[in-house]
Length: 121
Image 1 (cartoon, rainbow, N blue to C red):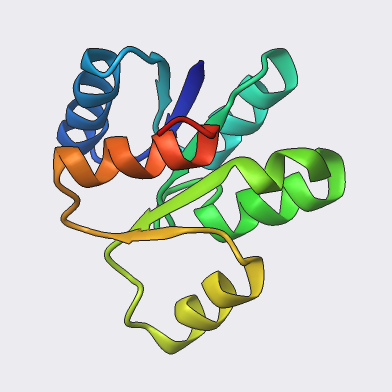
Image 2: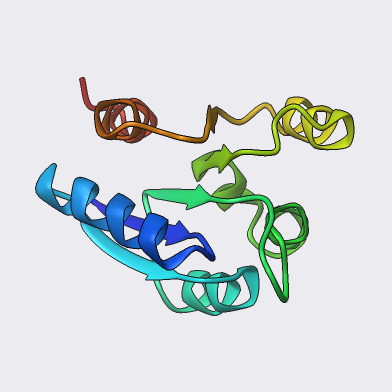
């Protein structure tokens, strides 16, 4: 199963990648929503681990682009954010109906959420 990590903080992106690779996933990691859109156009991902606050194209904008251009991919998004307390962000996340992990995320929590999204137990 392939996982796309979209996270602008290099140390967080790297940590998520190591954790998921150790759990047996093939991982591609990018640092913004524009790069993620290019990846989605080129490949198939079982899960997209998506940060909200990023440069160029932030998580909300990326998700909206998925809704328009790749609607089936919206069900594969796992949001990971430190912004879940912000009312606009909270409203957006609730509207998507997608799972959300609040930063900081521990390794077990991340792997469990990805497994749940891929149907693994």
